[in-house]
Image 1 (tube, rainbow, N blue to C red):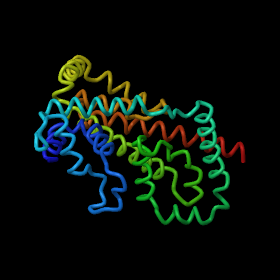
Image 2 (image 1 turned 90 degrees about the vertical axis):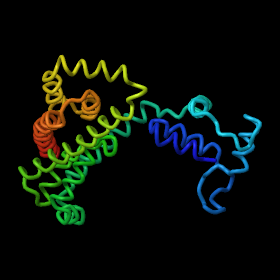
Image 3 (image 1 turned 60 degrees about the vertical axis):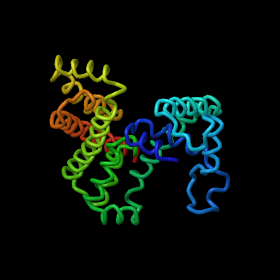
Image 4 (image 1 turned 180 degrees about the vertical axis):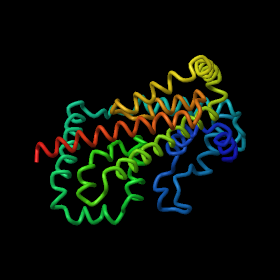
Length: 268
């Protein structure tokens, strides 16, 4: 009964959000109290839906009808969902609170013995992992280099610290490149025209975008994925993109570390 939906999910991965949304909408009540304890539509309900739609509870819906239904139903559920936008003032307060927290950690680094010991125990491997998560800003949108004074107070050396953070952030950008590359392959049917235009743009301008990516990564305090993912989609080489973001990350982290160190020293 569920085979057409599984085959569709395997053949068209971009439909996963719509398919999962439909499956969740069709989940039975109190599904968590009955085995297999999964929010899967019951066979009785699915047979009833097929009988009302096709006059046969064992009918196999055509693929194009499944696609139209799940995409339409997901769009309707989005429209019916009440708006839950966070007010701008709340966003500003959250950003200010996060900045205040980072300043507080750096100012109190000398008295935070337990935190310093934990950072020292994690060492450079732990710093590298945190930097990877920081570099892939979809997961962790806080720059690890903002805690540079704290790391120095915990016993880290300046140059290895900045090098580790730069390499780790570039590793996060590498994850963004993989996302863009996977999107290019999975979207071959639906975005063929766009992909052709993107590849033509790449053929005309091979090096200028890499220079712009370097400047962006080095001087713009925004996620590098904004450019890395589209450039992967446009088939820019992995080596070229990673070299540009690595050099930019070195400049960005060095400047940020010097700035936050000066600020903490002036305030403290």
